Each structure stands twice: as structure tokens, then as C-alpha cells.
Image (cartoon, rainbow, N blue to C red; front, side, top):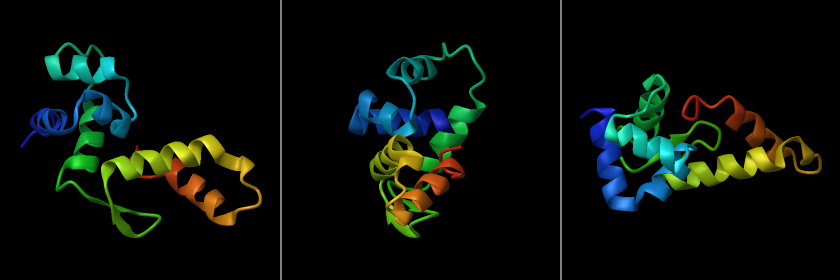
Length: 107
């Protein structure tokens, strides 16, 4: 199954807005990718699709070392990036921030 096929299936199941959030992309980028009108290189998007959805509806978070959904991954990433280095009182949040910055799934 190609990245485009996987993306179409995921959008059919969960909606374009949810999938765009999970992929950390705009709804416009997802729409353009689906229609074949995305003008930039699609390699990075295809890699992210395969990393998040390639094998199943779950993925293993390299930092948490547990199975999570793509939406949980997106929410954890958003929280880690928004709090970022301001979380000086919580070492686990700092570790999560660093892990999300260098995550192979979100690359």
C-alpha cells in the first residue's frame, strides 16, 4: 500500500482535519497531496505518513516506550513543543520536549 492509499483510507475514517493535525500539516497541504496538486517535494510527507500509519493504527513512542495512537502522538508533540524549555520544574516534560524534537516518527 502506498502512502497516498494509506492517507486516503485514514482521511475516510477520521476526516481531513484530524489527519492534518496528526501529521502536523495544514488541511490545505493534505488536500493538495490527496489531489496530486502538492507542488513541493512529497518525500517528507510520504515518510511521515508511513511512520505514523504504515503498519497499524498504533505506533510505538520511542520516548515513552509504549503503544499510542497517532492522535496521542500529535497531542504529546504539540504539548511538548508548546511548553518546551519553560518546563524547568518538570524534568519529564523536558525529556519529552527533547525526545519530540528529535523523534524519527515526526521527522
